[in-house]
Image (tube, rainbow, N blue to C red):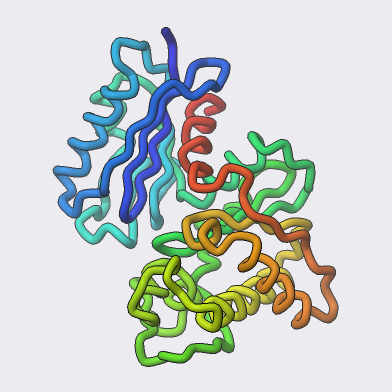
Amino acid sequence: MEIYVGLDIGGTKLMTASFDTGFKELKRVKYPTPTSLNEGIELLHKSILEVAGNSKILGIGAAAGGPLNPITGVISPLHQPEWRDIPLKSIMEKRWNCPFYVDVDTNVGAIGEYHLGNYKEKYFLYITLSTGMGGGFLVDGKIYQGKCHPEIGHQSINFRCSHPENIHCECGIEDCLEGIVSGNGIRRIYGKPAEHLSTEEWDEVAYNIGQGLRNITNILSPEIIVLGGGVSVGGGETLLKKIKVYLEKSLRLVQPPKLQLSRHGYDTALIGAAYIAKEN
């Protein structure tokens, strides 16, 4: 059998899945992401072997945290401190003897969400709220890249926070939106994971996300913003409705975008990775 393989290399989890040429998922595995680089690379190889078996791999796609170079395939994910300047493309192509493609997880998630979710909007923004925060902006189904990958999570907002002394971002700047509303940010600020937040704490998170989306909407004017990742999925429609209220209240000159949760939930980056393997 001929297959494609998708990798979701996250700061806390590593997921791998195989798909046939008709894009039907065949098998997947999930592991905690090791801190050690060597353990992580070996786990990638192990997980690919588990989902591929004796099948012929036509291509492998990967979603990883930035910063990275999608052309050279050299990655340095912010939330994995030991993974710095890693030539992942050459490592994987040498081991598996097939094409390997990698991009920032939010770009990969945006591509997977858009093309496999049958969206029609010309200006499409996908945002993931998970360990960190990032986004992928598509125009006519293609990634808008800029000189390098835009980092929407590293903007500053006029935030509300009951524990501002706990705000910290891994990039080193102390007032980034990612450090306030991401999974890691929420744990630092409130001392617990997002799923244990009170109604009042969720309201703070929703307000802060809404202010970030206000900035993005005023600059990019997307037709639709799709939210994915563990924090978004965990907050669900209740969180989405609160964000929508705060976003629309703060817009004056730009038309509010449609706002919805990802159609693929936690799997957006994983299926997007397999999609870029298949579609090159």
